[in-house]
Length: 108
Image (cartoon, rainbow, N blue to C red; front, side, top):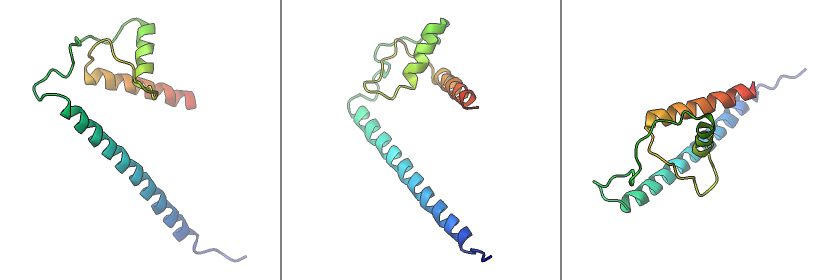
């Protein structure tokens, strides 16, 4: 039986190729974010209230409204839904963590 000693280097080469592809995707996302941010900044004054009249509110306690908000924050279809209120970033990040945890549990 002949051993293929090149296999580890082929695997390493494939891994480097995948990392380059991943880095390309990351770079594209990063560039898109900068372009979108700069466009938004160009449309707004520096001291302008970025909440555009939205009032702060705590996350909904009603289960149906909370589930709808979860669907809204992970929406991938345009146009993105407009929130009824301004929510603190820490609350939205916590909501994303709940969604992520629920998705992970469904996979198990």
